[in-house]
Length: 153
Length: 72
Image (cartoon, rainbow over all chains, first blue to last red; front, side):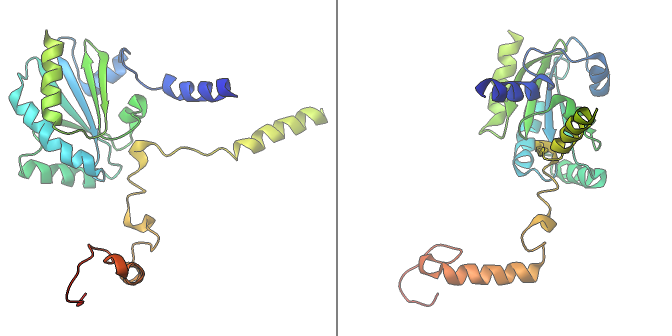
């Protein structure tokens, strides 16, 4: 029985991207990413309260980092694209959203990453997922900056 | 043949019992007002809040219990 439950649990993980996985070519094209940069992929939605809180902090990081070496990509998973866009506009007018955003109304991108919670941050280097942060955390900007420093060493 | 048919129909039937998990990115639907007990009707929620406040009045209703004048 234990084995059965463990297999069920692991099978759900098998079909999602985990730490150490390489992104397939079509996903690299969808996200428009290259080998030579570190990418931070942030999944968010307008209905996700903690994502809304976290985005200004991530934008703060975006303003501090060297964009030739590190890039932040937001993935808006709102099924209602108009709602998503107006949410982004609202953030942009407050200067709280400064990074590039890809709209994913069909959820094609997030269905492959399959995060276990939102917001979710995926660190990608050389097309490989090197770290994942689930859920909103305190002082996320400082955490990301520290992680970037560690990855660049 | 009958056994195989029965087995196949049983296998098809039990798939109907499986519960599909709500994925984290699908929770936008659950966050909608219409998914509340009162169906997002503000009159109902006002009424429900009134009942809740009355029932929990001894500990301050929906807020923090105050003391003193008894005007709450």
